Structures are given as C-alpha cells and as structure tokens.
Length: 116
Length: 114
Image 1 (cartoon, rainbow over the protein chains, first blue to last red):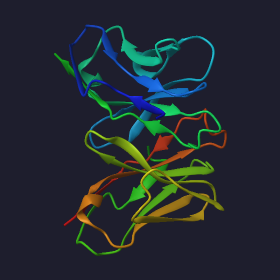
Image 2: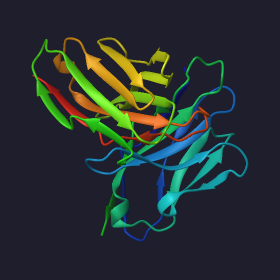
Image 3: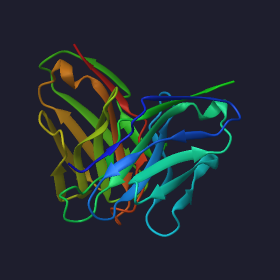
Image 4: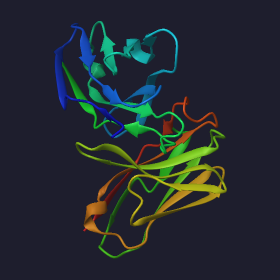
C-alpha cells in the first residue's frame, strides 16, 4: 500500500544539539514531500517541501530536510535545537497522478521534546 | 492562521445530534479540505473540494457530509453524531496547482460527542 510512515512517536533532544525527525514513504513514482509543525492548540503550519531538484531543502525556523530516493526517506533536521522547537511534527506525501489519491496523506506524527 | 477560520472552536454534543462545523477562508484559494486528528493516527482526510462544484470523499467520509457554499466557505456536517467522532477537526486550503502546493490550516475545532 502506498503510504507515509513516521517510525518514532517521540524524539527527545537537548537544547543546542542537532535533531532529526524521521519520515519514510512508500510510493511508486515521484511523490512530493512536505513537513508540517503543530504547536499546542494550533493548526498545522507548513515548514518545507520537496518537489524536485536539490535533495536538501531548507525551510522555516532553521529546519531542513533531505530527500533520499534510494532509501525513500525525507528526514527533517536542524543543526541546533531550541526549546521552542518542541511541538508535533507531521510528514506528508502528495502522490503522483493515477494513484487515486488527489490530496495529501499525512504520517502519524512525531512529538519533539527539546530539553533545556 | 487568521486567513482560515473555523467555528465553533469547541463543541460538546450528545449522541444522535446533528452538528455542523464551518470553515471560512480569505486566501482566495480554490481547494478546501476537512481532516480529523486523533492521537497516534495523524490527520485523516474526510472530504475535499477543488472548486465550488467539485466535492470528493476522502479516506474516512462515512458518517460525514459537506457543503461548499462558496469559494470561501466549506462546511462539515455530522448528521447523527456518535462518540467515536470525538476528535480535533481541521479545515485547510490550498491554491489551484494541486500536488505541489502547501496547505494552510485553520485553528481546529475540538468536538466531543457524549
């Protein structure tokens, strides 16, 4: 089945350390990939997306993500975590035409906790 | 994001009641979406609309209906609410390019069905 997976329910990291939030996808063809963040009591906010081109995508708040086609992954990264980065992060996939899916499919979410 | 508003923000209702959740947007986007969020399940698509005359079921449309009253308004109805529809509901919009466009989310409606 075509899907997107976030294997970690929660990631804990100390402030100032690098962080990685993992996302893998299972899609035939060329998907478009997105990361969103949800702060408490808020809707989701767009962070970044991969459409084509450079595999390293830079986004809001110092986040970046690396598209790896051979590993079918799109991990979210930040060189130095802040306490204010603590939130729920969602990976999402837009499937190619012909798959029957015309809207985004979201992963289950990963809660990032940055300790002071 | 104030460009996408949802009403009500919180609602408690009883089993069997009809409920309508409303979404309005000032972004001028053609595409609108309704999702529900449950812990550990992420966001699941209920219905989506690519323009006023285009309504499509998502992955979990049973028990829900929608109305696209205008480009700016997209309402979600629960005809007869049941407890397992207790969830956080989000409306979202995107521009007309489709696959490559990010979505803009409203603040959510927390619905509790007793």
